Image (cartoon, rainbow, N blue to C red; front, side):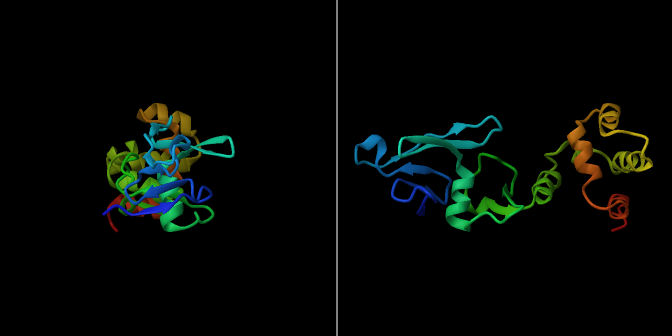
Length: 170
């Protein structure tokens, strides 16, 4: 059974479900409830348009759901999809975590380009970066990935931990 809770800041106007749906409690001032059709945001997330006192705000469904069911977002955390599917907004798929934790989901599920690299390639990138002679952009061009992928790889943990993890000895 789908569970509904008030949207934080829009109590009495909107509710969000543990399945990621959002509904208006007074759709277009008709007095009837209506599940809102989500739009895809530029980054691929479901979002809905909320209205209060004549002001409209577009909000992402997963953020509304996390706020309602998990409580306020802790400082330095973001809402993460456990399976990295931005459209899977079931409560069981959401959690608060750091950006690094969110990246780890993508990495462990092999959804991130760096996760598809061999251990040898990752070790080579880390070693070149640690020499200090290569920029992230240069490494990205050399290995055919984005500079963001390089940044996430080289900034993942401290140097010795990265090499130990990548060596397969752990």
